[in-house]
Length: 232
Picture 1 (cartoon, helix red, strand yellow):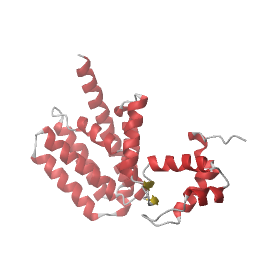
Picture 2: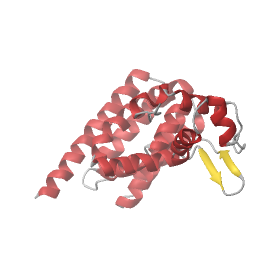
Picture 3: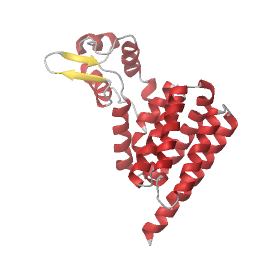
């Protein structure tokens, strides 16, 4: 009987992949996993099938095969997933701008959770970034301050899930911040960021969600403006 490779839709219900993930969940980072022979016997599949499943995990950086040493559990890294996302964007011809809505949802939730977390250290980072925005007019310096602000915003949520996905979407973050720092609307840029910080400091969840929406409505206008300019 021919064994069928799982599709992306049923990958999580695939018993071999599920067995591998369950085993890895109980292992320490850097620990060597059992040999292919032992694992194939445990899961009742051919070594070729097992090797194919392990190859998927290797491509994501979860496993690392070392010559003459075996295969080791290295854990999933946000940076590796970010590379996969970027390659996916390129291969599917999906514009990075089209993912702004994902960033919007992520940061809205981060702002709400930041109101609850009361992370004074990362709120202080946001305030310092705002001071930098106020002090400079150079587009590159504004972008650097903007990126620091949003990194601190995500971190202030103290949500491991949001922080992980923000790292995954780092390429999108950097690219979309190029629009934030357009030098013909610096006044609005400074205001919308300060409004977000003020709402978090006040621990006003409804206001925080609202001002993040205002930020991204403004960002959408910036994207449209730049797109229109490019077409001229």
